[in-house]
Amino acid sequence: MLHPNTELQTINPRVGCGVFATADIPAGTIMYAKDAMEIIVREEDLLYRDKKYREHIEKYSYTEADGSKVLSWDLAKYVNHACDSNTLSTGYGFEIAVRDIAKGEQVTDDYGMLNIEQVMSCECGSRHCRKMIGINDYFHFREDWDRKVRAALSCLHSVQQPLLMYLGGETRALLDGYLNGTDNYRSVGELERCVVQDVA
Image (cartoon, rainbow, N blue to C red; front, top):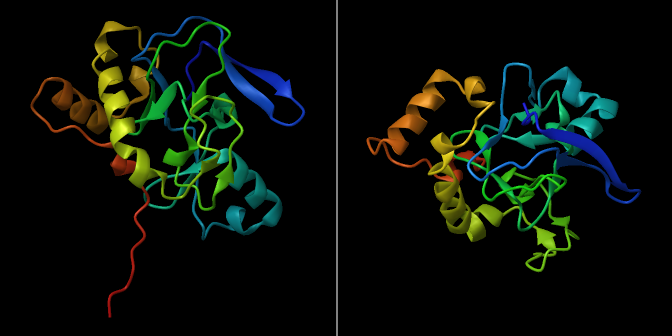
């Protein structure tokens, strides 16, 4: 589920649509939480084998560490990439605003965190644009992503959190443990897809 203070807008014919903030959203705000209404698709599912659905699934879903694809039921599927995105995924399975998002600003994510399966070209226009979103971006950017996420998590309890109720009990316990200093931080590396190989 995407944060309620957002709306879909058309950007241009090339980009299509994007998600924009309808109010100021402070850093530390949970922007997306995987809720019970999300559609989970696995490669063996009949839905994924059907070409007309597979193309839509591949375009609008993200891939979890176990290889399953998550297709959001709401506007979350329209969040675009930016190399200096204002939200990032966390090792706790939700996305957080890593800086203040102004009313009218586009809400963006870093697709390098979504276990993409092929290199994508990028024209996000930021001065730090990587030009390519790679399948190995976790290796290159994990430390920077973790630094930004940790800073955002430090603000978690000081801002309104309309999506907090959608985090599962285990996630809440792990998160509270980290914020209280009793558990270790869960790196964004927890999201990276692990490909199991047979060892002869």
